[in-house]
Length: 296
View (cartoon, rainbow, N blue to C red):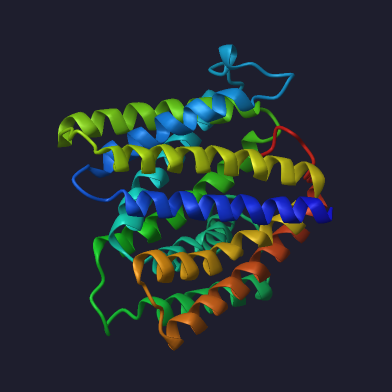
C-alpha cells in the first residue's frame, strides 16, 4: 500500500511536469497544434503500455459506444482547454480552478445521479469555492479567458468522472484510452488546419514530445498505483500538484503566489480532500473495487 501511494505521488509529479512543458512551449504555435503534437507523443508512448490480456486492434469495440464517445469528447475538450489555460495564466491559479472538479462531481451527482449529498460534502463545496476566490480574487483583478478555460476543465473533468462510473466496469482500458486518443488527434488536427500550422522549433518539438511522454508515463504510474493501494489512499495524492505548481511556477516561470493565494490553495486542497474522502466512503457502499485493472 505504501508503495502505491509513493507511485501515485510520482505520477502526479509527472503530470505537473508535463503541464510545465506545455506552458513552456507557448510561442507561435496555436493551442490546437500544441494539443495535436502532445497527443501524438502520448499516443506513441501509450501504445506500448497495454495489458497482456488486451490489444489495441479491437479498441473501437465498445459495449456502450455512446458513453465511450461522450467520455472521449469531454477528455479531449479538457485537454485542449488545458493547453490554453496553462499557456495563459499562472500554474497555481490554473490548478486552483481545475481542482474544483470534485465539487462539480458533487453537483452533478445530485442533478444527474440523484444522489443524496450530506452536509460534509456541501460544506467542502463552499470551502473550496472560497479558497478559489482567495487565489483568483475576481473584482480585485482582471480575469482572463485562461481562468474561464480552467474552470471549464473542472466541469469537463467532473463529467468524465460521472461517465467513468458507468464505463469502468464494462469497458477495457484500451477502449477508453484508444477512443479518447483518436478524438484528441482528430479534433486537434481539424483545429490546427483551421487556425494555421507553424513550423515548430527544435525546442518546441522537444517540449511537446516531453509533455506527451510525461502524460503517458503519468497514466501508467497512476494505474500501477491503483493496483497497489486502495483508491481512497491514491486519490488525495493528486493535491500534491498544488505544491508542484507553486514550486515550478516560481522557479521556471517566476510566478509567485502572495500570502492570500497560498492560504486559498491550502483551503482548496483541504476541501478537495474532504470531498474525495466522503466520495470514497460512499462508493465503498456500492461494491467499489479499487483494484479493478480496467478502472481508470
